[in-house]
Image (cartoon, rainbow, N blue to C red):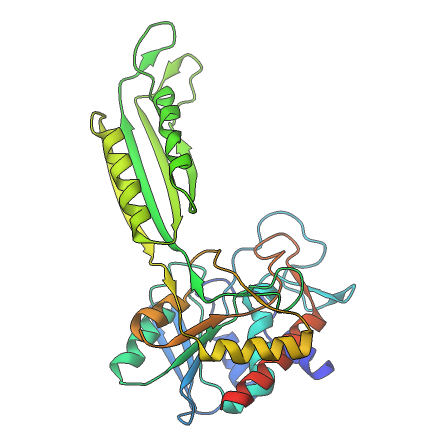
Length: 347
C-alpha cells in the first residue's frame, strides 16, 4: 500500500489541460516504461505505450479541470492523506484510476495518455486513435476508467454514452421602454420552455440566457440563449429541430447548431462478463449497467474500430469536479486489484 501511495503522489501536482511535458517524463521514469512514443501536436501531448502481444487498449488522461476560486480543506494539488482520503483535484477524474491500472500491469498494457480531455479534445484521444488506425494497428477491446461507481467500487459500470448537441440562438427585436406596449423578447422566451417537457428520456438544459441590458426601464433589442441536449438517439435531434424551427419560423433569429458527441452503445461484450465476474468475486456485489452520463473519449475508439468491445469502470464519482474532490486510498487499491486480475485473465 505504501508503494502504491508513493506512485500516486508522483502525479498529484497541478496539471490542467495542455500541461507541460514534465508529468509525462515523471511517469516514464518512475515506472521505467519502454516501447513508448511521445507525440506532441500544438499544445497537446500524447503518451503511447505499446506491447504488440496484446490487442486491447486503455484510454486515459492526465489533465484536470480548474480547482476553482473557493478555498479547499487542503491544498487542491497536495499529496496528503486526510481521514484516509486523498483530497486532490483530479484524483477521481482520473489520476487515481490511471495509477490503479498502471501499478500492477505496466508490462501487459497498451495505453494512450493525453493532456487534452477536459478541453476541446481534438488532438488528444481522437487524434491518437485516428493515427493508430492509419498505421493499421488492430485492437479488439478498449476500456476507460471514468468514475462510474456511485456508492461502492464496482456497483455501476458503463457500456454506452449519450450524445451531446449544442444550440445557440440570438433573438433580435427593438429596444422598448417599459412604459409602452410592444414585443418583449424575454416574455417570448417563456413560451419557448415548452420544449423541455417534450424531449422525453433525454436531458435538455438551458445553459445561458443573456440580454446585456443594465437599465431598469428599458428592454433589450437582442437576447442570447444557449442550450445543451443529451440524447440517446438521433431521432431526439430530429424532434428537437422540428419543434425549434416551427416555433422560430416567424421570429427574427440566428441559429447555430453543433453536434459535439455522437451516442454509442456496445451491445456485444465478451470482456464485460469477465470484469463483472471479477468485481463480484472481490467486492461481493452484482454490478449494474449505467446508461446515463455525458460523452467520453472512448467514443472515438468505438467510431474508428466499430466492431470493438468497450466498457468504462472507475472510482466513486460523488465528488468529481467539485470542491474538495476526494477518494479513499483503499478504493484506488481495490480498483488496482480488480484490473490486475482482469488484465492477467485476458492477456
